[in-house]
Image (tube, rainbow, N blue to C red):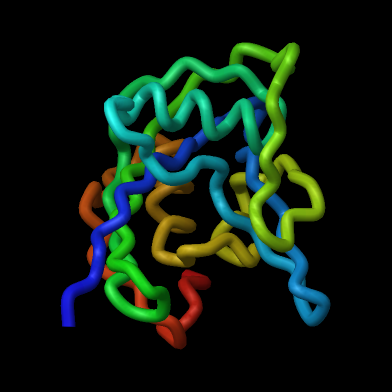
Length: 154
């Protein structure tokens, strides 16, 4: 069986000790994901992340360095590769063409000092984002996160 590989560009946007995240609710629970999404044909990754952030949370950003790579090999109809970029917050976007994610109910600024205990997914991103923010050593390639992996709460 052949499965497509989907490249996704995600944004780490930090402002005043907080991380911008999309808030989702499926009717049973609420959780967060980083803004960003799938790369279009003939679009380079920085363009993808800047466009997706504008469409999902009405925020203008400037894409900077690649921070993390994380994969999702199982649980979806495709093999997902998330490339997570540090982005500078520019401000509220004007004339944004909004396209909300499935189950998106808004967005929040999450406190980075307790990010490891918040429902941000993939959970393997929580501690590395905190370590980056705190100036500590962190790993760039985070591997695969399976559905049902233990929560990252340390």
